[in-house]
Length: 339
Ligand SMILES: Cc1ncc(COP(=O)(O)O)c(C=O)c1O
Image 1 (cartoon, rainbow, N blue to C red):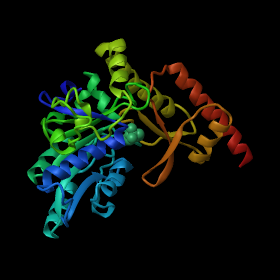
Image 2: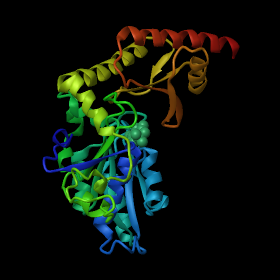
Image 3: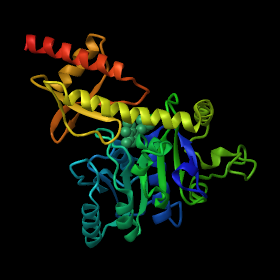
């Protein structure tokens, strides 16, 4: 996975999910930046971190869990496609520096949860590294684009960043949980996660003694599942899988454009397709589809309006999509009739 990320010297650890991978990155960045004596914790540093206004909520929660504080996590404005704006990041870092804060960490998102947008890694890394910040990429969802030569360009610049979350349990189809946090430079993970426990860690090889770099002590064998799935599908199988997901998002978008009464909210950035139904509340549509046993799909807010948020996360055919949209159309007729 480090090879795909462009971290030839890198290392990493499996965690119980993308939220925890993001937290591991924040912890290591915090320790690298602030703590010379690990006994003292943050010791009053006014640390601030950044993510976009489209970032996953785990980054906010992690700011609390790591002692940074939710208020010290800035939500940077994104553009019309949902990508963090480099000039807005730069301006906020400068404002924080002028106010005596210590910016240390920026979370970029590769594949945002609602729109599937990819923050521009090159430009944002120029800004963040220019100010000496740690750059993390949350690729919990979009990291798997690396498996496709057609779509990996969405993560251009990744080899420059400091850490990277990639969930095998999302688009790679590995059963929950299977997530990694990868680090470009080896060493920091062991430096900060290691503990002395001579009743357990009796060698000094962190590859064999995986507990020396892990958040947990006992844990499930998440690596084995990812390894076995990859052995079965191979690189080519995964390329085909990712290409299918993105292609089917395109098919879904075309179906919506071609259907009276459905409105595509934005052209898909990746595997997410957001749409609305004329005269029908999106949340009511999702609930009715579920109640009728027709489909299970979620909803979210985009630019203040509630939309149906379809994320095509497992292999799909155009026929299945057509069945789904026919269910949406039938349910819309029923909901309008009782409104
Ligand atoms: C962008 C992003 N980051 C992180 C997560 C959290 O991942 P997990 O559910 O594995 O903790 C998600 C989940 O949807 C996500 O979309």
